[in-house]
Length: 312
Image (cartoon, rainbow, N blue to C red; front, side, top):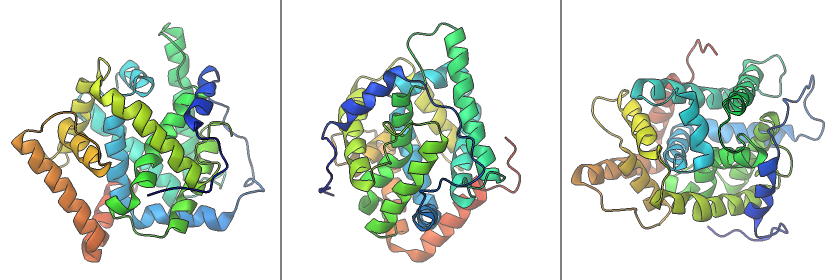
């Protein structure tokens, strides 16, 4: 997929890194929707996720496993000690996906909605972890504007970069609206305009996510930080608690992701991990080409990530 026509500077990543010295912003106090919002684009962006919820969740989980290799994103997870075992990891990341799903199925623009309460809670948790890390005298700054740019790229990057490969249903205009929706997720997450990767539309977001992939994530996978393997394994082992067999491993998820990105794998996979990659590819093929399978997968994922009672 080639993107052209944007007047933004090529090295967007350098521009975003200037946010390394700025903390996450306050939660916006709004009683009404921002006046400049295009409500039709916003709602269509939510609909794009709903129509593709199964593969969007898979894409976000693939980004998460690869994202463990980025030290800025890994250190807060290690510090909180809430995802270092399979059971704790499953709970943490199910809660994360449930928050994200709630933003798409609910209405973050409504100040009285559960979706607004959810995104406010996530913003509060980020600030709380940042403050505790400061109190503990950990090295460096955490949850900076730049870090939040990387978090935003983690959620939308795989979807933006590989919609055709993943079999996402919808037009380029629909994907543009999905990016527009995430502009406002960034707004409510305390990301300022200079570091909101979705603020200038799909082409610019694509360029940023491609730079993050090529210049940060891919090199980091070949030289991952200290706790990468233990955290990634806790996560995939946690996912396997939802299935009847060991469907996921860090190696298979990363192998699948690199194949989608048409990039060289880190190392040869074992026979069983090769089978796991083929299983993931078959699942994507069926989601792409079989409407009945896509509907079934969407309903199953919705039943998991949209529980009747989600306490947070």
